[in-house]
Length: 239
Ligand SMILES: CC(C)(COP(=O)(O)OP(=O)(O)OC[C@H]1O[C@@H](n2cnc3c(N)ncnc32)[C@H](O)[C@@H]1OP(=O)(O)O)[C@@H](O)C(=O)NCCC(=O)NCCS
Image (cartoon, rainbow, N blue to C red; front, side, top):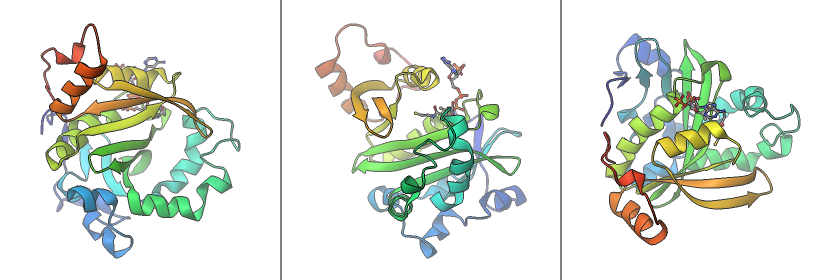
C-alpha cells in the first residue's frame, strides 16, 4: 500500500481495536448473521486485512458495519448532510427504506462506518457493479467532521490499493453537477467523467470512473480523449 504514513490498520488485539469492532462483529464473523457480501464472493476480499483503520492518533476509525447498523445514522442525518428538506427526501421516506432495500444492502454491499471518539460520524457504502467494477453507492460525513478528507483518503489510500491487485479494474460513482466538493475531489484524484445520467430518484448525475488498471485507463484516454491528458503526467502515486 502507498501513502500509509497518515493512516494505519489497528491491530486486532488492542483494546482500541476491540472497541472499534464491537457491534457489529468482525467482518469475518459477519457470515453468521448475514450472507457474505458480493465483494467476498467475487474477489475473495478479506476486509479484516484492512479494518479497523485509524487516521492518525486522534483521527477517525473506520470499521466494518452493516446497513442495519448505519440505518439510524442515515435516517437521522442524511437530510441535513445533503441539505434536503426533512421528510421530503428519498433517504428517509418510508417506501425507500423497505425490506428489499435492506436485503439488497445485506447481500451486495460493503458498509464502512466512520467513528470519532466512538460516535458514528459518517458512512461509506460500496457495491460491486460487475466482476471488475466497484461502485461507491453513498458517502457522507457529518458537516462538522468534513474538511480532513477522511472519506476520500480511505477510498484512495486504502480501498484502491487493496482492491486493485484482486482484479478490480475501476471504481465508479455518481455526483450531482452542483456538488462542488465531490467534483473537486474527483478531478483532483484522477477520476474521469465517463457519463451523464438522468434519474428519477437523484436528479441528474455525472458518472465518474477511477481506473485502477493502467491498461484500461490507457484505452479510455486513447479512445475518448483529445488534448491535454493530465493524468499521464508523472504522479507521486502513479496508479
Ligand atoms: C463527500 C464527502 C463524503 C467527502 O468527505 P471527505 O473525504 O472527508 O472530504 P472533505 O469534506 O474533507 O473535502 C472535500 C473537498 O472539497 C472541498 N470543498 C468543500 N466545499 C467546496 C466547494 N463549495 N467548492 C469546491 N470545493 C469544496 C474541500 O475544500 C475539500 O478539498 P481540499 O482538501 O482540497 O480543500 C463529504 O464532503 C460529505 O459528506 N459531503 C456531503 C455529502 C456528499 O456530497 N456525498 C457525496 C455524494 S456523491
